Length: 185
Image (cartoon, rainbow, N blue to C red; front, side, top):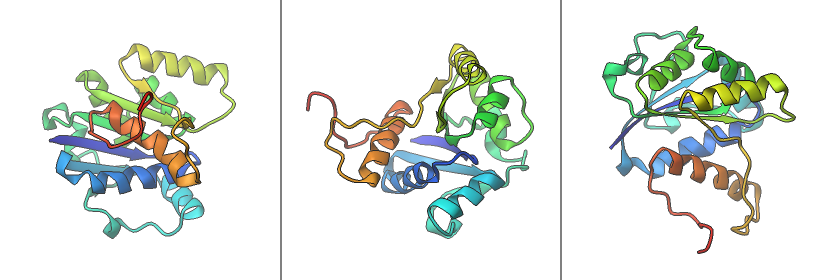
């Protein structure tokens, strides 16, 4: 059973975060703990882009971005994976440089140092050379950079199915068994 950390930052694309949380609810038989940390800008974008946010909609433990007493702020807690979705370029830069100034960056630092699975989902375009170099550095450190780039070979017909093509792939990357259309099916 997975123990998973979700970081939600202020990059546009809150629909990705919402669909990730919604899908994790459906996969509750595959995880034992999900800890969620949302930045202030992450909350602002959620409410701007998808509507009012309520913790009560989800069976997860929510933590303040300044709460360094959260269990996953230490490697001894044994959280196996972390997904930062959407991941702003500022967050990506701080993680790539090892700047642990909030709970999301500290948790990402812990996941990397423990050689566990860190997936960052940037939603930005175009990319600058600084962005690309930070992505290379994270990849070299063991993270997976999985930009929110949907697939279309499954015949996605609406915005939700396009978003889900990204979220299903991300869930695959951290080891969840997801029922989805796969290449060649």
